Image (cartoon, rainbow, N blue to C red; front, side, top):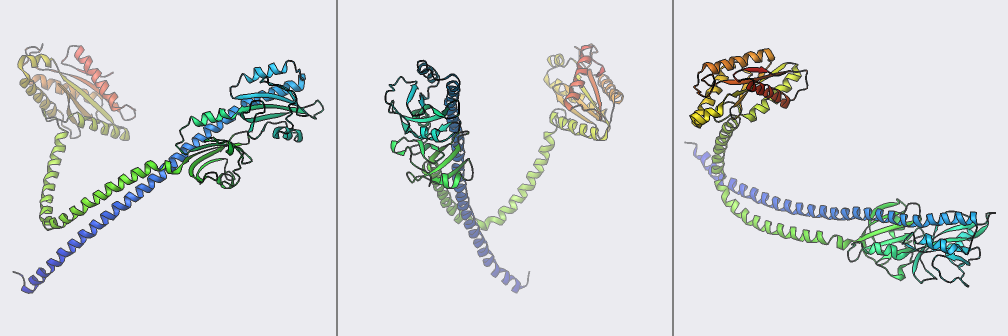
Length: 514
Protein backbone atom coordinates (compact mmCIF):
# COMPACT_ATOMS: atom_id res chain seq x y z
CA UNK A 1 0.00 0.00 0.00
CA UNK A 2 1.15 3.52 -0.68
CA UNK A 3 1.35 6.36 1.74
CA UNK A 4 -2.18 7.68 2.55
CA UNK A 5 -1.22 11.28 1.78
CA UNK A 6 0.19 10.30 -1.57
CA UNK A 7 -2.92 8.27 -2.40
CA UNK A 8 -5.14 11.23 -1.47
CA UNK A 9 -3.10 13.54 -3.70
CA UNK A 10 -3.42 11.10 -6.59
CA UNK A 11 -7.19 10.91 -6.08
CA UNK A 12 -7.35 14.72 -6.08
CA UNK A 13 -5.32 14.94 -9.27
CA UNK A 14 -7.52 12.54 -11.22
CA UNK A 15 -10.45 15.01 -11.67
CA UNK A 16 -7.97 17.68 -12.73
CA UNK A 17 -6.42 15.33 -15.26
CA UNK A 18 -9.89 14.43 -16.53
CA UNK A 19 -10.82 18.13 -16.88
CA UNK A 20 -7.52 18.74 -18.67
CA UNK A 21 -8.35 15.98 -21.12
CA UNK A 22 -11.79 17.48 -21.74
CA UNK A 23 -10.33 20.95 -22.29
CA UNK A 24 -7.75 19.44 -24.64
CA UNK A 25 -10.51 17.68 -26.56
CA UNK A 26 -12.56 20.90 -26.80
CA UNK A 27 -9.47 22.82 -27.95
CA UNK A 28 -8.76 20.17 -30.56
CA UNK A 29 -12.37 20.22 -31.76
CA UNK A 30 -12.36 24.02 -32.12
CA UNK A 31 -9.00 23.89 -33.90
CA UNK A 32 -10.34 21.28 -36.33
CA UNK A 33 -13.45 23.34 -37.04
CA UNK A 34 -11.44 26.50 -37.59
CA UNK A 35 -9.02 24.59 -39.80
CA UNK A 36 -11.89 23.30 -41.93
CA UNK A 37 -13.29 26.80 -42.28
CA UNK A 38 -9.84 28.16 -43.17
CA UNK A 39 -9.31 25.40 -45.75
CA UNK A 40 -12.69 26.06 -47.35
CA UNK A 41 -12.00 29.80 -47.51
CA UNK A 42 -8.55 29.18 -48.98
CA UNK A 43 -9.89 26.71 -51.54
CA UNK A 44 -12.72 29.09 -52.46
CA UNK A 45 -10.25 31.93 -52.98
CA UNK A 46 -7.89 29.70 -54.96
CA UNK A 47 -10.80 28.51 -57.08
CA UNK A 48 -11.83 32.12 -57.70
CA UNK A 49 -8.31 33.02 -58.83
CA UNK A 50 -8.24 29.91 -61.04
CA UNK A 51 -11.56 30.80 -62.69
CA UNK A 52 -10.34 34.33 -63.42
CA UNK A 53 -6.93 33.18 -64.64
CA UNK A 54 -8.47 30.47 -66.82
CA UNK A 55 -10.75 32.98 -68.54
CA UNK A 56 -7.86 35.42 -68.93
CA UNK A 57 -5.95 32.71 -70.79
CA UNK A 58 -9.02 32.02 -72.93
CA UNK A 59 -9.41 35.71 -73.72
CA UNK A 60 -5.70 36.03 -74.51
CA UNK A 61 -5.91 33.12 -76.94
CA UNK A 62 -9.10 34.53 -78.47
CA UNK A 63 -7.52 37.95 -78.90
CA UNK A 64 -4.52 36.38 -80.58
CA UNK A 65 -6.75 34.40 -82.95
CA UNK A 66 -8.91 37.40 -83.83
CA UNK A 67 -5.83 39.58 -84.31
CA UNK A 68 -4.48 37.03 -86.76
CA UNK A 69 -7.85 36.99 -88.56
CA UNK A 70 -7.93 40.80 -88.78
CA UNK A 71 -4.33 40.89 -89.99
CA UNK A 72 -5.06 38.30 -92.69
CA UNK A 73 -8.24 40.09 -93.79
CA UNK A 74 -6.52 43.44 -94.16
CA UNK A 75 -3.37 41.91 -95.64
CA UNK A 76 -5.38 40.32 -98.44
CA UNK A 77 -7.01 43.62 -99.30
CA UNK A 78 -3.71 45.49 -99.04
CA UNK A 79 -2.01 42.99 -101.34
CA UNK A 80 -4.62 43.73 -104.03
CA UNK A 81 -4.06 47.45 -103.51
CA UNK A 82 -0.30 47.10 -103.80
CA UNK A 83 -0.67 45.21 -107.10
CA UNK A 84 -3.23 47.73 -108.35
CA UNK A 85 -1.06 50.76 -107.49
CA UNK A 86 1.98 49.22 -109.16
CA UNK A 87 -0.03 48.49 -112.31
CA UNK A 88 -1.63 51.95 -112.49
CA UNK A 89 1.68 53.77 -111.94
CA UNK A 90 3.53 51.76 -114.58
CA UNK A 91 0.80 51.10 -117.17
CA UNK A 92 -1.34 54.18 -116.70
CA UNK A 93 -5.09 54.46 -116.17
CA UNK A 94 -7.25 52.87 -118.86
CA UNK A 95 -10.71 53.97 -117.71
CA UNK A 96 -12.46 51.66 -120.17
CA UNK A 97 -10.85 48.51 -118.74
CA UNK A 98 -10.23 49.60 -115.15
CA UNK A 99 -13.76 48.87 -113.74
CA UNK A 100 -13.64 45.30 -115.06
CA UNK A 101 -10.19 44.83 -113.56
CA UNK A 102 -11.35 46.13 -110.19
CA UNK A 103 -14.47 43.97 -110.25
CA UNK A 104 -12.38 40.87 -111.06
CA UNK A 105 -10.00 41.56 -108.20
CA UNK A 106 -12.83 42.34 -105.78
CA UNK A 107 -14.55 39.03 -106.54
CA UNK A 108 -11.51 37.16 -105.20
CA UNK A 109 -12.18 38.26 -101.59
CA UNK A 110 -15.61 37.91 -99.99
CA UNK A 111 -14.80 40.47 -97.29
CA UNK A 112 -14.30 43.28 -99.82
CA UNK A 113 -17.11 45.78 -100.20
CA UNK A 114 -15.35 47.38 -103.14
CA UNK A 115 -12.21 48.66 -104.85
CA UNK A 116 -12.00 52.33 -105.92
CA UNK A 117 -9.55 54.63 -107.68
CA UNK A 118 -9.65 58.44 -107.25
CA UNK A 119 -7.62 61.08 -109.03
CA UNK A 120 -5.69 63.87 -107.33
CA UNK A 121 -8.90 65.95 -107.00
CA UNK A 122 -10.90 63.17 -105.36
CA UNK A 123 -12.96 62.36 -108.48
CA UNK A 124 -13.86 58.72 -109.07
CA UNK A 125 -11.84 57.22 -111.89
CA UNK A 126 -13.21 53.72 -111.48
CA UNK A 127 -14.86 51.38 -108.97
CA UNK A 128 -15.58 47.66 -108.76
CA UNK A 129 -19.25 48.01 -107.86
CA UNK A 130 -20.59 49.52 -111.07
CA UNK A 131 -21.96 52.52 -109.16
CA UNK A 132 -22.42 55.77 -111.08
CA UNK A 133 -19.50 58.14 -110.90
CA UNK A 134 -20.97 61.42 -112.10
CA UNK A 135 -20.30 64.31 -109.72
CA UNK A 136 -18.98 62.04 -106.95
CA UNK A 137 -16.02 63.49 -105.10
CA UNK A 138 -14.24 61.95 -102.09
CA UNK A 139 -11.67 64.61 -101.43
CA UNK A 140 -13.27 65.23 -98.03
CA UNK A 141 -12.67 61.65 -96.83
CA UNK A 142 -10.04 61.09 -94.14
CA UNK A 143 -8.05 58.62 -96.24
CA UNK A 144 -7.89 61.03 -99.21
CA UNK A 145 -6.67 63.91 -97.03
CA UNK A 146 -4.10 61.64 -95.39
CA UNK A 147 -2.52 60.50 -98.65
CA UNK A 148 -2.68 63.96 -100.22
CA UNK A 149 -0.74 65.46 -97.33
CA UNK A 150 1.49 62.47 -96.55
CA UNK A 151 4.06 61.14 -99.06
CA UNK A 152 4.21 57.70 -97.36
CA UNK A 153 3.67 54.80 -99.78
CA UNK A 154 2.55 52.32 -97.12
CA UNK A 155 -1.05 51.25 -96.47
CA UNK A 156 -3.36 53.46 -94.42
CA UNK A 157 -6.19 52.14 -92.25
CA UNK A 158 -8.93 54.73 -91.92
CA UNK A 159 -11.80 55.01 -89.45
CA UNK A 160 -15.07 53.17 -89.96
CA UNK A 161 -17.38 55.07 -92.32
CA UNK A 162 -20.62 54.61 -94.22
CA UNK A 163 -20.18 53.95 -97.93
CA UNK A 164 -21.53 56.65 -100.21
CA UNK A 165 -22.18 54.07 -102.87
CA UNK A 166 -24.14 51.53 -100.77
CA UNK A 167 -24.76 53.06 -97.33
CA UNK A 168 -23.05 50.16 -95.55
CA UNK A 169 -20.53 50.43 -92.74
CA UNK A 170 -17.03 49.79 -94.04
CA UNK A 171 -13.38 49.86 -93.02
CA UNK A 172 -11.05 51.58 -95.48
CA UNK A 173 -7.59 50.40 -96.54
CA UNK A 174 -5.86 52.77 -98.96
CA UNK A 175 -2.59 53.50 -100.76
CA UNK A 176 -1.28 56.63 -102.42
CA UNK A 177 -0.93 56.95 -106.22
CA UNK A 178 1.94 59.05 -107.57
CA UNK A 179 2.67 60.68 -110.91
CA UNK A 180 6.02 59.76 -112.51
CA UNK A 181 7.56 62.85 -110.90
CA UNK A 182 6.50 61.65 -107.43
CA UNK A 183 3.65 64.14 -107.00
CA UNK A 184 0.26 63.12 -105.69
CA UNK A 185 -1.84 61.37 -108.36
CA UNK A 186 -4.75 60.04 -106.34
CA UNK A 187 -5.78 57.18 -104.07
CA UNK A 188 -6.42 53.47 -104.52
CA UNK A 189 -8.97 52.33 -101.96
CA UNK A 190 -10.21 48.95 -100.73
CA UNK A 191 -13.27 48.88 -98.46
CA UNK A 192 -13.99 45.95 -96.13
CA UNK A 193 -17.45 45.13 -94.79
CA UNK A 194 -17.59 45.67 -91.04
CA UNK A 195 -20.16 42.87 -91.05
CA UNK A 196 -17.30 40.57 -92.08
CA UNK A 197 -15.81 41.09 -88.62
CA UNK A 198 -19.15 41.29 -86.85
CA UNK A 199 -20.40 37.95 -88.20
CA UNK A 200 -17.31 36.24 -86.82
CA UNK A 201 -17.57 38.03 -83.47
CA UNK A 202 -21.28 37.15 -83.16
CA UNK A 203 -20.49 33.46 -83.75
CA UNK A 204 -18.32 33.33 -80.62
CA UNK A 205 -19.98 32.54 -77.29
CA UNK A 206 -19.13 35.51 -75.09
CA UNK A 207 -21.98 35.11 -72.64
CA UNK A 208 -24.80 37.63 -72.30
CA UNK A 209 -22.56 40.62 -71.58
CA UNK A 210 -19.20 39.86 -73.22
CA UNK A 211 -17.65 42.16 -75.81
CA UNK A 212 -15.25 41.94 -78.73
CA UNK A 213 -13.90 45.22 -80.04
CA UNK A 214 -11.65 46.14 -82.94
CA UNK A 215 -9.97 49.43 -82.05
CA UNK A 216 -7.81 51.81 -84.06
CA UNK A 217 -4.44 52.95 -82.75
CA UNK A 218 -5.89 56.40 -82.07
CA UNK A 219 -8.27 54.76 -79.54
CA UNK A 220 -11.40 55.06 -81.74
CA UNK A 221 -13.72 52.06 -82.02
CA UNK A 222 -13.75 50.41 -85.44
CA UNK A 223 -16.42 47.83 -84.58
CA UNK A 224 -17.80 46.45 -81.34
CA UNK A 225 -19.84 43.41 -80.45
CA UNK A 226 -22.62 43.83 -79.42
CA UNK A 227 -23.09 46.20 -82.37
CA UNK A 228 -24.39 49.74 -81.89
CA UNK A 229 -23.88 52.39 -84.55
CA UNK A 230 -23.38 54.99 -81.83
CA UNK A 231 -20.30 53.08 -80.57
CA UNK A 232 -18.44 53.34 -83.89
CA UNK A 233 -15.82 56.05 -83.71
CA UNK A 234 -16.16 56.47 -79.92
CA UNK A 235 -12.88 57.19 -78.18
CA UNK A 236 -11.37 54.82 -75.62
CA UNK A 237 -8.37 57.05 -74.93
CA UNK A 238 -9.28 57.30 -71.23
CA UNK A 239 -9.91 53.57 -70.81
CA UNK A 240 -7.48 51.40 -68.78
CA UNK A 241 -6.56 49.68 -72.04
CA UNK A 242 -4.85 52.81 -73.34
CA UNK A 243 -3.84 54.43 -70.06
CA UNK A 244 -2.44 51.33 -68.30
CA UNK A 245 -2.14 48.21 -70.44
CA UNK A 246 -0.96 49.12 -73.94
CA UNK A 247 1.86 51.41 -72.69
CA UNK A 248 3.35 48.35 -70.96
CA UNK A 249 2.77 45.61 -73.54
CA UNK A 250 1.29 45.02 -76.98
CA UNK A 251 -0.56 41.95 -75.68
CA UNK A 252 -1.81 40.76 -72.34
CA UNK A 253 -4.70 40.13 -69.98
CA UNK A 254 -6.33 42.04 -67.13
CA UNK A 255 -9.55 42.63 -65.25
CA UNK A 256 -10.76 46.17 -65.96
CA UNK A 257 -13.92 48.27 -65.91
CA UNK A 258 -15.34 49.49 -69.24
CA UNK A 259 -15.60 53.24 -69.81
CA UNK A 260 -18.53 52.59 -72.15
CA UNK A 261 -20.96 50.69 -69.92
CA UNK A 262 -19.15 50.53 -66.54
CA UNK A 263 -19.09 46.70 -66.51
CA UNK A 264 -16.07 44.96 -64.97
CA UNK A 265 -14.71 42.36 -67.37
CA UNK A 266 -11.94 39.79 -67.71
CA UNK A 267 -10.08 40.86 -70.81
CA UNK A 268 -7.46 39.84 -73.32
CA UNK A 269 -5.97 42.23 -75.87
CA UNK A 270 -3.42 42.17 -78.69
CA UNK A 271 -2.14 44.55 -81.36
CA UNK A 272 -2.68 43.45 -84.95
CA UNK A 273 0.73 42.76 -86.45
CA UNK A 274 1.66 45.23 -89.15
CA UNK A 275 -1.45 47.41 -88.83
CA UNK A 276 -2.55 50.16 -86.38
CA UNK A 277 -5.34 48.10 -84.82
CA UNK A 278 -5.98 46.40 -81.49
CA UNK A 279 -8.28 43.44 -80.80
CA UNK A 280 -9.97 43.47 -77.41
CA UNK A 281 -12.00 40.50 -76.08
CA UNK A 282 -13.68 40.51 -72.66
CA UNK A 283 -16.09 38.42 -70.57
CA UNK A 284 -18.32 39.80 -67.83
CA UNK A 285 -16.55 39.10 -64.54
CA UNK A 286 -19.86 38.33 -62.79
CA UNK A 287 -20.67 35.72 -65.45
CA UNK A 288 -17.17 34.24 -65.19
CA UNK A 289 -17.59 33.85 -61.42
CA UNK A 290 -21.20 32.60 -61.55
CA UNK A 291 -20.20 28.92 -61.53
CA UNK A 292 -17.59 29.66 -58.85
CA UNK A 293 -20.28 31.20 -56.62
CA UNK A 294 -22.47 28.12 -56.98
CA UNK A 295 -19.53 25.84 -56.12
CA UNK A 296 -18.59 28.01 -53.16
CA UNK A 297 -22.14 28.09 -51.79
CA UNK A 298 -22.38 24.32 -52.16
CA UNK A 299 -19.03 23.86 -50.40
CA UNK A 300 -20.09 26.24 -47.63
CA UNK A 301 -23.32 24.29 -47.15
CA UNK A 302 -21.49 20.98 -47.01
CA UNK A 303 -18.92 22.33 -44.54
CA UNK A 304 -21.67 23.77 -42.35
CA UNK A 305 -23.34 20.37 -42.28
CA UNK A 306 -20.03 18.69 -41.50
CA UNK A 307 -19.31 21.14 -38.70
CA UNK A 308 -22.73 20.41 -37.20
CA UNK A 309 -22.08 16.70 -37.34
CA UNK A 310 -18.57 17.22 -35.98
CA UNK A 311 -19.92 19.21 -33.06
CA UNK A 312 -22.32 16.40 -32.17
CA UNK A 313 -19.59 13.82 -32.50
CA UNK A 314 -17.27 15.94 -30.39
CA UNK A 315 -19.67 15.76 -27.46
CA UNK A 316 -19.75 12.00 -27.78
CA UNK A 317 -15.96 11.94 -28.11
CA UNK A 318 -15.56 13.59 -24.73
CA UNK A 319 -17.71 10.91 -23.15
CA UNK A 320 -15.67 8.19 -24.82
CA UNK A 321 -12.35 9.57 -23.60
CA UNK A 322 -12.78 7.73 -20.32
CA UNK A 323 -12.46 4.48 -22.22
CA UNK A 324 -9.45 5.70 -24.19
CA UNK A 325 -6.77 4.06 -22.10
CA UNK A 326 -8.38 0.63 -22.20
CA UNK A 327 -8.99 0.90 -25.95
CA UNK A 328 -5.42 2.06 -26.47
CA UNK A 329 -4.03 -0.97 -24.65
CA UNK A 330 -6.22 -3.28 -26.72
CA UNK A 331 -5.16 -1.51 -29.91
CA UNK A 332 -1.48 -1.89 -29.04
CA UNK A 333 -1.95 -5.60 -28.41
CA UNK A 334 -3.86 -5.93 -31.67
CA UNK A 335 -1.17 -3.95 -33.48
CA UNK A 336 1.53 -6.34 -32.29
CA UNK A 337 -0.55 -9.28 -33.47
CA UNK A 338 -1.19 -7.63 -36.84
CA UNK A 339 2.51 -6.90 -37.30
CA UNK A 340 3.29 -10.53 -36.63
CA UNK A 341 0.57 -11.65 -39.06
CA UNK A 342 1.86 -9.20 -41.68
CA UNK A 343 5.37 -10.58 -41.32
CA UNK A 344 4.02 -14.09 -41.82
CA UNK A 345 1.91 -13.01 -44.79
CA UNK A 346 4.88 -11.23 -46.33
CA UNK A 347 6.88 -14.43 -46.13
CA UNK A 348 3.99 -16.43 -47.61
CA UNK A 349 3.59 -13.91 -50.45
CA UNK A 350 7.09 -14.78 -51.66
CA UNK A 351 6.69 -18.57 -51.41
CA UNK A 352 5.05 -21.06 -53.72
CA UNK A 353 2.24 -22.73 -51.79
CA UNK A 354 2.73 -26.17 -53.35
CA UNK A 355 6.52 -26.65 -53.26
CA UNK A 356 7.63 -24.19 -50.62
CA UNK A 357 10.14 -22.73 -53.08
CA UNK A 358 10.33 -19.06 -53.97
CA UNK A 359 7.50 -17.95 -56.28
CA UNK A 360 7.70 -16.00 -59.52
CA UNK A 361 7.42 -12.67 -57.72
CA UNK A 362 10.44 -13.36 -55.52
CA UNK A 363 12.35 -14.81 -58.48
CA UNK A 364 11.91 -11.67 -60.61
CA UNK A 365 13.01 -9.40 -57.77
CA UNK A 366 15.99 -11.66 -56.96
CA UNK A 367 17.23 -11.79 -60.58
CA UNK A 368 17.00 -8.00 -60.95
CA UNK A 369 18.91 -7.47 -57.70
CA UNK A 370 21.61 -10.01 -58.56
CA UNK A 371 22.08 -8.62 -62.08
CA UNK A 372 22.61 -5.19 -60.59
CA UNK A 373 25.14 -6.65 -58.16
CA UNK A 374 26.90 -8.52 -61.00
CA UNK A 375 27.25 -5.32 -63.03
CA UNK A 376 28.66 -3.42 -60.07
CA UNK A 377 31.16 -6.15 -59.14
CA UNK A 378 31.84 -7.34 -62.73
CA UNK A 379 30.97 -10.90 -61.68
CA UNK A 380 29.12 -13.81 -63.30
CA UNK A 381 25.45 -14.73 -62.96
CA UNK A 382 23.91 -18.00 -64.16
CA UNK A 383 20.30 -19.16 -64.57
CA UNK A 384 18.85 -22.66 -64.93
CA UNK A 385 15.39 -23.24 -66.38
CA UNK A 386 14.17 -26.75 -65.41
CA UNK A 387 11.08 -28.43 -66.85
CA UNK A 388 9.59 -31.80 -65.82
CA UNK A 389 9.45 -34.04 -68.90
CA UNK A 390 6.14 -35.56 -70.02
CA UNK A 391 4.32 -33.99 -67.08
CA UNK A 392 0.90 -33.82 -68.73
CA UNK A 393 0.83 -37.58 -69.42
CA UNK A 394 1.94 -38.07 -65.80
CA UNK A 395 -1.05 -36.02 -64.60
CA UNK A 396 -3.41 -37.80 -66.97
CA UNK A 397 -2.28 -41.26 -65.82
CA UNK A 398 -1.72 -40.78 -62.08
CA UNK A 399 -4.04 -37.85 -61.34
CA UNK A 400 -3.45 -34.29 -60.15
CA UNK A 401 -2.74 -35.15 -56.50
CA UNK A 402 0.10 -37.40 -57.68
CA UNK A 403 1.24 -34.60 -60.03
CA UNK A 404 1.37 -32.17 -57.12
CA UNK A 405 3.37 -34.68 -55.07
CA UNK A 406 5.76 -35.14 -58.02
CA UNK A 407 6.35 -31.38 -58.20
CA UNK A 408 7.01 -31.24 -54.45
CA UNK A 409 9.60 -34.03 -54.76
CA UNK A 410 11.32 -32.35 -57.72
CA UNK A 411 11.38 -29.06 -55.81
CA UNK A 412 12.95 -30.82 -52.80
CA UNK A 413 15.57 -32.46 -55.04
CA UNK A 414 16.47 -29.09 -56.59
CA UNK A 415 16.81 -27.53 -53.12
CA UNK A 416 19.03 -30.40 -51.93
CA UNK A 417 21.41 -29.92 -54.83
CA UNK A 418 22.09 -26.18 -54.47
CA UNK A 419 24.10 -25.68 -51.32
CA UNK A 420 25.38 -22.10 -51.48
CA UNK A 421 23.46 -19.56 -49.33
CA UNK A 422 23.29 -17.05 -52.19
CA UNK A 423 21.58 -19.45 -54.65
CA UNK A 424 17.80 -19.35 -55.16
CA UNK A 425 15.41 -22.07 -56.34
CA UNK A 426 11.95 -21.02 -57.49
CA UNK A 427 8.86 -22.43 -59.10
CA UNK A 428 8.59 -20.54 -62.38
CA UNK A 429 5.12 -21.81 -63.21
CA UNK A 430 3.33 -25.10 -63.82
CA UNK A 431 5.94 -27.86 -64.01
CA UNK A 432 8.76 -25.40 -64.69
CA UNK A 433 11.40 -24.38 -62.12
CA UNK A 434 14.24 -21.85 -62.12
CA UNK A 435 17.55 -21.70 -60.25
CA UNK A 436 19.60 -18.51 -59.94
CA UNK A 437 23.32 -19.04 -59.33
CA UNK A 438 25.16 -15.79 -58.52
CA UNK A 439 28.92 -15.89 -59.18
CA UNK A 440 28.67 -18.93 -61.49
CA UNK A 441 29.71 -19.13 -65.13
CA UNK A 442 28.48 -21.55 -67.83
CA UNK A 443 30.69 -24.40 -66.64
CA UNK A 444 29.70 -24.22 -62.99
CA UNK A 445 26.03 -23.76 -63.88
CA UNK A 446 26.14 -26.77 -66.24
CA UNK A 447 27.62 -28.94 -63.49
CA UNK A 448 24.82 -27.94 -61.11
CA UNK A 449 22.25 -28.60 -63.84
CA UNK A 450 23.60 -32.09 -64.47
CA UNK A 451 23.69 -32.80 -60.75
CA UNK A 452 20.01 -31.89 -60.44
CA UNK A 453 19.05 -33.83 -63.58
CA UNK A 454 20.79 -37.02 -62.38
CA UNK A 455 19.32 -36.64 -58.88
CA UNK A 456 15.78 -36.48 -60.31
CA UNK A 457 16.40 -39.55 -62.45
CA UNK A 458 17.90 -41.45 -59.50
CA UNK A 459 14.89 -40.60 -57.34
CA UNK A 460 13.00 -43.12 -59.53
CA UNK A 461 9.63 -41.42 -59.41
CA UNK A 462 7.59 -43.91 -61.43
CA UNK A 463 6.32 -42.64 -64.80
CA UNK A 464 5.22 -45.39 -67.21
CA UNK A 465 4.70 -42.91 -70.06
CA UNK A 466 8.33 -41.78 -69.95
CA UNK A 467 10.98 -43.54 -72.05
CA UNK A 468 13.06 -43.83 -68.88
CA UNK A 469 10.19 -45.34 -66.89
CA UNK A 470 10.71 -42.57 -64.31
CA UNK A 471 10.27 -38.83 -64.03
CA UNK A 472 13.09 -36.87 -65.70
CA UNK A 473 13.83 -33.18 -66.23
CA UNK A 474 15.29 -31.07 -69.03
CA UNK A 475 17.50 -28.09 -68.17
CA UNK A 476 18.38 -24.90 -70.07
CA UNK A 477 21.58 -23.20 -68.87
CA UNK A 478 22.50 -19.56 -69.41
CA UNK A 479 25.09 -17.21 -67.87
CA UNK A 480 26.19 -13.61 -68.28
CA UNK A 481 29.08 -11.52 -67.03
CA UNK A 482 28.83 -8.17 -65.33
CA UNK A 483 30.43 -6.31 -68.23
CA UNK A 484 27.46 -7.08 -70.50
CA UNK A 485 24.31 -4.98 -70.60
CA UNK A 486 22.02 -8.03 -70.63
CA UNK A 487 18.62 -7.52 -69.00
CA UNK A 488 16.88 -10.05 -66.79
CA UNK A 489 14.33 -10.66 -69.56
CA UNK A 490 17.16 -11.52 -71.96
CA UNK A 491 18.73 -13.94 -69.47
CA UNK A 492 15.41 -15.75 -68.89
CA UNK A 493 14.68 -15.85 -72.63
CA UNK A 494 18.11 -17.37 -73.39
CA UNK A 495 17.75 -20.04 -70.69
CA UNK A 496 14.23 -20.79 -71.87
CA UNK A 497 15.46 -21.16 -75.44
CA UNK A 498 18.14 -23.60 -74.31
CA UNK A 499 15.45 -25.51 -72.40
CA UNK A 500 13.39 -25.69 -75.58
CA UNK A 501 16.41 -27.16 -77.42
CA UNK A 502 16.81 -29.76 -74.66
CA UNK A 503 13.13 -30.73 -74.95
CA UNK A 504 13.30 -30.87 -78.74
CA UNK A 505 16.47 -32.97 -78.63
CA UNK A 506 14.95 -35.85 -76.68
CA UNK A 507 14.57 -34.51 -73.11
CA UNK A 508 16.42 -35.64 -69.97
CA UNK A 509 19.44 -33.50 -70.80
CA UNK A 510 21.06 -30.14 -70.00
CA UNK A 511 21.74 -27.65 -72.82
CA UNK A 512 23.86 -24.50 -72.58
CA UNK A 513 22.45 -21.41 -74.30
CA UNK A 514 24.34 -20.20 -77.36
